[in-house]
Each structure stands twice: as structure tokens, then as C-alpha cells.
Image (cartoon, rainbow, N blue to C red; front, side, top):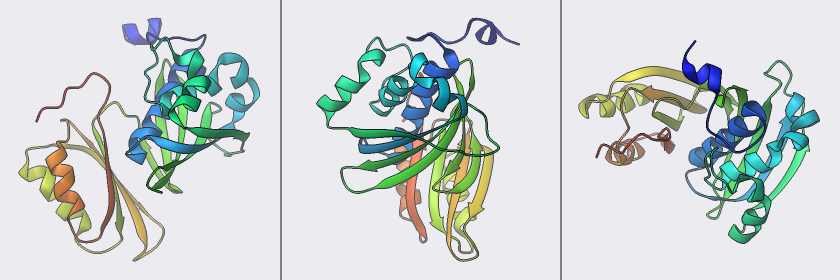
Length: 225
């Protein structure tokens, strides 16, 4: 156990699980969309659904979608700020079955029509776990620089993507693969020991079979180049 586990995160709100974690879940979904969302549907599961309103979970999720961090003093005012930024949102409940009780399914749409569906859980102490993207299973925390690659399921995709990272000196910490079926759509989630440079993302986007690439850089990590 470390000091963070005892004291918890610096945040605005009554609960690290329902507030700080919820902000990070919204922020992660925004990052995976790759642009500020203009429409959002947020489906709350378990204790998020039953007690989230009293703990500020709703405001916290919207704050994350607006790009705020858990210690932003504007978190309680996120609904009004969403209106100013043109973000339309609705809340509902959902039963996600065997997942952590502090979970949500977040569906986003950007101004250019891009869409993404992210399911994540708040684990306590401000920590989160993304367990599904666009209906495909995954598992990552956002504590490491992360690359999410949507691709067609075809030979060579994985080796080409990891080859780009290797040539740029980026070490792969974890790599997860999931797909709808043979030859159909797939998602590759790569966690790296180093910040993933924009140039690497552009090179991966140009590879055959790649449909969409999103990178996530944890809070406080500087862009290296």
C-alpha cells in the first residue's frame, strides 16, 4: 500500500469513487473519442445508478467529458458549462451484469460524426479500469500511455503496428487484442512505458487495415517530442 491509497487523490467532491473516478472516466472517454464530444449518453450501473446523484457522479462524468481533472473547482458547475460548450447529454441506467458496481457505459459523438462507446469502472481512490470499447472487451487503467487501434482483422496488422513503435524506441508494456470475428473489426490496446509521439500515431494511421487510432497520455506526463 502506498500513500496515495491512504490519502486518496486531490479532488473536488465527496467521494473518490463516485467523483474523482467518474471525472477520470469521462476524461478517458473524451480522449478515446479523439475530440470534444457534442452528444453523450451516459448509462449508469450499480451504485453509480442508485447513489450517484447524491455523490455528484453525474456532474463528475460531464466534467470529465469537458476535459476537466478531478481537482478542477468547476466540477460542480459542469452542467452549466456543458451548455456553454454545446455538449448535449442524457443519463439513464443499465445493468452491465458482472462488473464493478461503480461502472458506466458512455456513448459519445463528435462534431464530425465520429462515435465511440466506452465502458469503465471506478475502482476507488480515483483509479479507473476501462473494460470495453465499442462492444469489444479490454482492460486498461490509463496509468500508462495507451494506444487504442481499431482495425480490420487481417494478417500483419499487429506486427506492423508494433513495428512502428519499436522503430521509434517505444517499449510495449502490454498488448491486448479482441475482435468481432475472423476478418471483421478488431481493437488493439497497447500500453507503453513511454509517451507515444504524435508522429508514431500518424504513421500507424497510414498502415493498411487501420480504421482509427487514438492515443491517451496520463495526466502530468509531458510530451517527449
